[in-house]
Every structure is written in structure tokens, then in C-alpha cells.
Image 1 (cartoon, helix red, strand yellow):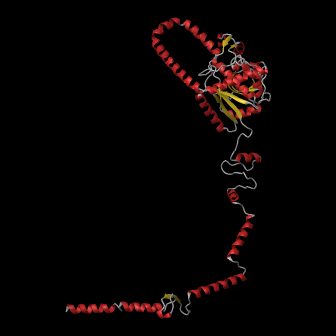
Image 2 (cartoon, helix red, strand yellow; image 1 turned 90 degrees about the vertical axis):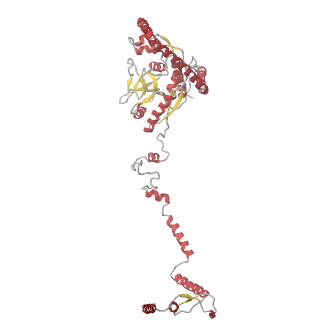
Image 3 (cartoon, helix red, strand yellow; image 1 turned 30 degrees about the vertical axis):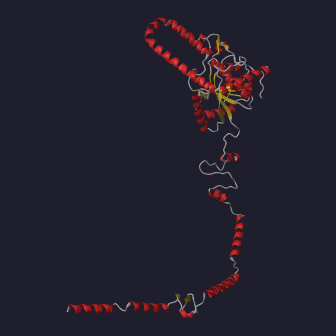
Length: 474
């Protein structure tokens, strides 16, 4: 019974599945043959070996016939467009180029476009600039506007004032500090048109200095007039030997005077411990406007004795005419002043006294800032490379008097201080030998520089002898 039921169930399922696969695909092919645009393989007896495009209601054609029909229709299209004024592709692009060229006459170039994009009218101001660092468009001076916005902007169109820094070849530490502070000042104030360069000083202890240029001794009477009586100068002898440092300093300035005498304008001479004071830039620029035309020297830094008042003060300015000042930390000298000082050679005293005495005798017209705009790095005579003969003479006498007055006391403390003195002497000896070796090592590499200094002094001496002390400008 169960077998009969299963057989009946399978028969019913088979009947519901519909026709078999062969019947299904036969019906499918029959339907597709009646569809449009169907590519079918022709019968073998049709005599064609290519596929045909069968379209309901249209006659099939070969590929050759198709493309012939295509060309004919294209020709009809071209003829139709000719009536409407249309052109071929070549004519179209020719007209396109012609119209572009015509438009180019009134259009702008890429650079002009971007200039206008940035807001610059290149026709009115080719060098105009906007944005940060730009120029006020209402600027009156077109030349100044052009100069300020150019890439190679030069804040000193009239040139730069040379500034010679007198420095010993072995004092690179001073030159480094000098370069930092002065270059920093000029970066902050580019309107200060100074060209700084190092000038190798004459070494008075090594370089031979002609006596016709710098003497070996000097008389302190002239300087005593301005120091006064009842002062430390009472302890100074009337005649002193110039120290090697004083002679070297004087020879260095003589060489610089010779250099300036050949120039067309003034120059600044400073020592390597010169420091510009606050506001130096504005004060110097204003001073250059206020200085009289007859100036030979202008002191930027100095020390003025109480017994030397200003000869006259220029109203409304910070400039005064000076008679006697000390130090050569910084001054400006004109070619006329350099020639006047050279004609009075030899330097027969410390060089600052020599220069001031020429002003005292009305040989040179000397002016100074009433408030110095240059100061020394350290107080006078502290850690200086130049020993001062009058100061040494005074100190020697004070030490001698102090020694006699305290002889008894020194005898009592000698036992206590003897070990320290021995250690100090040992260290001093070691340091002296070390520095002597360093000086010899430096001297081997400085022969060329030393010889240049000597050559300059010898040249000045020869010219002095030939011209009878009259130095020409060139």
C-alpha cells in the first residue's frame, strides 16, 4: 500500500514540472527568431558566409552596402550644412585660431592676469606691491617706491661710510664681540650706512716704528694743563718714555690717516672695544646733518677733562666744538683732517694728546657729540692692551712710597705669604712660557701681516721725507 502511494505522488510531481528541457529550448528559439535586430547564422544554402543583420520590416544588406549607404548619407549632411553656413572641421579650427589671435590683442598675458589677480595694476605701476611689506600707494616719490619694492633693495643708494676697527691680530675675541654688536645694530638699523672692516694694528713690541713717525719719549707739560694741579698728575714726571702699546697705537692711527687722506670722504675709526649706545643710529644720522662743513674731526666717543670746556655749542644740536679731549675709542675724520695731522708728524705724545693739541693750536677744526654715542667696553685702562706711561709712572711712585711705609708690616707677614708668593711666581713663569710659545706660533703665521704694517710705515716715512712733510691727497 505504501509503495502505491509513493508512485502516485511522484507521478503528480512530474506532471507539475511542465515540458521537458528539449521542449523548453525549442520554444525559446522560436520566440527569438521573431525578435528584431538579432544576429543569426544564415542557413547553409543561403550562399553567404557572413552574419546578417535581420530587422523586421527591412531588407538585409551586406557590409559593403552598409558603408556605401553611410557615405551617401554623410554627403547629404555636408550639403545640408553648407546651405546653413556651417564649415568643415579644418575651416572651423582655422576660424577658431583667427578669433583667438584677434582677442589676444585686447587680452592680458598670464603674468598680467596674475598681477591683476593680486591687485596690482602693471600698467600704472609695474613694481607696485601689496600685502605685508607693501608700500603706501599714495607715496609721492615714484623713484623711492620703485627702490623700496625691488628685490635688490639697497638702503644706502649713496654708498656706505667706511668704519675701520683697529684691532691686534691676536685679539680675535675682541673682534668677535665687535662684529656681533655692530652687525646686530646695523641689522636693526639698515639706514645706518656703515661698512665695517678690521684694520690690523701695529704691534709696538714687535714691529719697528720709525722715529720720524712716532717718538720714544714725550713731555707731560701740555697734558698737565688740562688735568690740573693737586691731582694724581702731580705724581707724574715731566718726561716719560712712551710704552710699546702707545707707540703701536700711534703708528696704527698714522697708517689710517694716510689711508683716509687718499679718500674722497670721511671715515670712522674705532677701537675694538667700542660699543654703540642706545639710539646710536638716530643720533649719528642727525649729527651728520648738523656737523659744520669745515669739520676735520668729529668725536663719537671720548673723555673730556673738566678744565677743557666746549669752545662753542651749536644751537639746537647735540654738537659742540672741542678743544681738548682724551681717548680714541671712536671718531670720524675727514681727508682734510688726516692731512693736517700727517703734516705735523712725528707723533710726540700719546696719540689722543697729539690730536687734541692740534685742536688746541687751531690747526684742526674738531667737533664732538656733547653726549657721546660710543663708549668703551670696560672703564678706562681696565684690561687694556695699551699701557699708559703716565699711569704707570704714577703707580710706580705710589707703590714705592707704600713699600717704604709698610716695610715693617711686610716683614711680619712675609712668612705667612711666602708659600702663596712662590705658587704665584711658579704659575706666572709657566704662563709666560706658554704665552711666549703661542706668540711665536702666531708670529710664524703673521709674517705677511706684520710686513704689511711695516711697509706702510716705511712708505709714509719715505713720502714724508720726499714731500718735506706735505702729504698730498692722492
